[in-house]
Length: 86
Image (cartoon, rainbow, N blue to C red; front, side):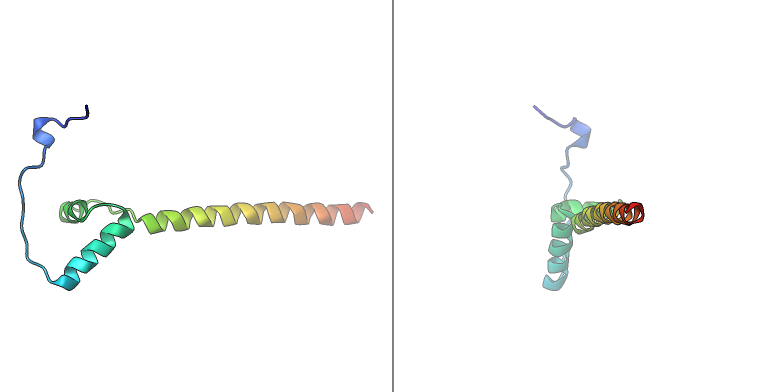
């Protein structure tokens, strides 16, 4: 099994009162990052980095577009060189 060492088990709870709008913002941001609200608040409080799931998807889409442009450029260059040969 995957048991955490005794010093890594989270047992202390911190409570805070927030408005419904603030809670909705926390939930929305947690969903964008692909983590729980508890993990989001923990990372924010400890100054750790948040990685957005949306940013990762956008980055992967840009990589695909870049690859497509490279292929199109290669085909265009091939077409131009074949015209010169004929």
